[in-house]
Image 1 (tube, rainbow, N blue to C red):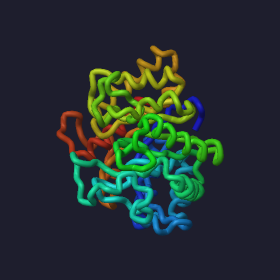
Image 2 (cartoon, helix red, strand yellow):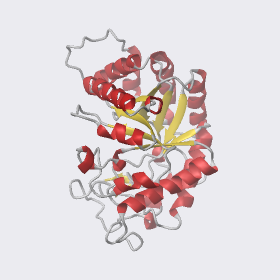
Image 3 (spheres, rainbow, N blue to C red):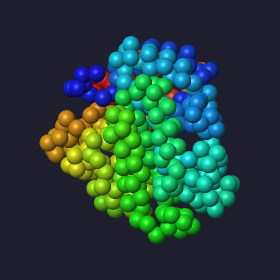
Image 4 (cartoon, rainbow, N blue to C red):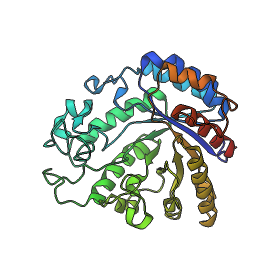
Length: 342
């Protein structure tokens, strides 16, 4: 990808050995023809780890990763694997495989396993545990090597379990300082040691009070204060999925020196509005080069049927007036946004 090309990114969760072939077909028959030049593959703990097999809860092998990476390279697509760091270590009170194998890393071990939202969202690992980074770096390094990646996405969206009152290490600490520490530790390994670019979701860096965002798209607990204590060479993916009156975070991040990729979901009109407003703010702040492009995210479950449906859809498969299902609308958004960026 030339430096001047707009980023046309697509994100999906994927961790299945059985679906590698249809995934490769999806890349070759949908993403490449649409001009996608960055593919963010959220494999998380679905990768088959060799150093830490106890973490594995999926079937995506190192060989699978190499095959996917090879297909992407043939089509000029940059592969960026994603592994959720700090937060999203499970859903509700149920821990993921990392915290099942290493419960000592849990920030909130006292939370019941059957806890549900709104009482509890999801678990985090403790950013001050002295042994967590060694494990995390092993996992990230193995994924980077498998995909032969020159960038890594560390997730870090929707982190709410932080500075818990019952954590012996984090109790009483500022959430902004803890969040910055976690980011800087990851940056030290990924950028300084491994020499790869670091991506992350931006929502915890958005001050809800200043931006007007809700608790999901912005922060109400203090993590946003980390924005002044982290390196500006981190690429921030700022997601907003519904139409809003304004998206002030784009201009804020650009003015602070970050490169930004606004990120949409399947709602086409909202995505177009977000991209248009992001471009306006980039010009207004005199930082158009650091508005890199846009990412279309997908949060549906990808299976054989979903891949095959996408492969057979075309721009003329439906009209703008149709009431579309989520998968059809996702295709339309992908189609429209990639054309807007061309």
